[in-house]
Image (cartoon, rainbow, N blue to C red):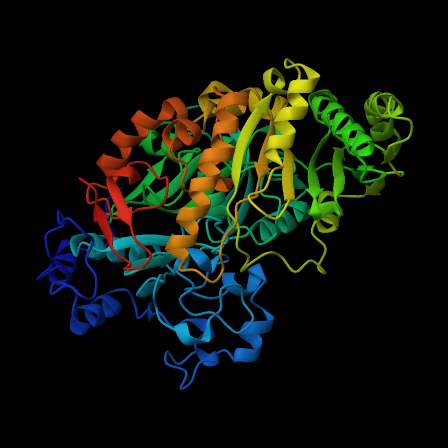
Length: 600
């Protein structure tokens, strides 16, 4: 499907555009940066939807240099709320990746003397309401050798929805939701039960609409996460262990590439794009405006249980017993998942847990009762207690009666209470790995304990944090071959998605310096651990180290070379750049200067 605007309109807009094979993407310091008149012409051509970036916290600085219409008080009080940043054209949840360019007082990294600047934010934003506007803007930016970024909700943890001197495509207006129980599957005489969803939606909107329609959609675990980047990176969530990841549900997408072409990609046309969008990474091949996703029957009930384990003291015996019991717990998770449970475990060690070890394991069950969940968990509890008994009461293990919910949305609300403020504005760098039975059950107990202890080490403050997501298992393993795309193949054998933190990030240092230092530690400690523990497994790219030197194998696996070809075909100007993206090793993005330049 070709671009919507006429060639004459596009030709007029591109008069005077620079060649797109420069060493660096164009910046306002370059003579070929578009003039004010050219920007105005673009704005007219896209219906007045172009926004000059105005950082929301500008109101906190003398003279309000960018004329923010939001009060400093509101910006300051809302800074940790994801929904606040999602509603703003330029703002992102983790501003460290925008070079802390304009922070309100009290925010991590705030330094009054630094002042407020556009910095790592995009220069202009297209507040698009139509595919035609996106098409015109993408072609114009590519011809002018500009970097392009895509923002939905700005929830991305690794800065992929922002970039200095870029033109940003803001997709939040694409919020259509339509359920169709007999959507014709292209190339067949059969139909599918689907939701046709705009990429600007967040998962709370989708879940609520699905509940009202008696359906379930596989999506994310946080209400403010948007569909766009989440799905393209794979997209795990509370039901992915049952049905596969969000990327596994895609039957069709509408996507606009950087030359302005609008494509429909499904099993019968533009199959290469469909394959890439099914888990091949966000913000790299074009701007997705619409997904057609499989739906599933809504669960008639949901159950939430919590298994808590902690050491009773800080003496060596108690701590050692807790580590042994914790390892038994982790090793038992695949059996829980095969029996139908999902969930998430948060583990704290050292000063994060009062000098001990504490694991809080939330368990999810669908179409079952509290009694059924308790019976599934009982054998594991017995094993953990048996391990703890060896140390004569050095651990405490509790599993209160699970709570029952009448539907998925009330259950999801319990997972995400309104009182939770979120972690927007926080400073962190994570590393992750997918783990299967080979890594959890086929290693000696002592070796598993050692791996877990290393994963919970921290760089300097003794605060160990690790999260296990029960997001693999039977669901991803049973996805039909014809629904599988570029998603890393280790999802098909994985049970757990393990996330670890631990690197120091100096909030007072320049973000470029602080991130480089944290990445050095992460690569030396975490990535080497994964290479030893799970060398053939991959990582979930949406929640992973953005400076992983082995990202091609870890985030894309055997799909990487195929994705390189697709990237070159549909983004020949390499206008779309993200950290650890396909072909990103050919570019250097410097937060200090804002420049994006080729390394070759």
